[in-house]
Length: 109
Image (cartoon, rainbow, N blue to C red; front, side):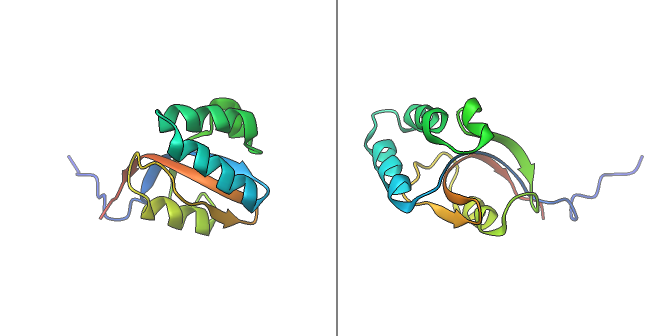
């Protein structure tokens, strides 16, 4: 039986995000999330209400994706973010301003 070689397998992550069109809006949402008693619950509520992405209907849940599927700056922010860390900043891509919540990451070597 051959063993699966994980060395060439891309990294993967399970992420939620809120996508908005303007920097001041992103700052305001981050402030609401960081000041909430339950930051994740607030994140989900705000994603559903304000996100410009279709994932907003799923409380910002993008599900799991593999490296190379998302915008480069978005992915860089995901890999630089700790798991279940309350977001304190946003990342800008060609789509707008993303506030990111990382649920899990799988780093393959």
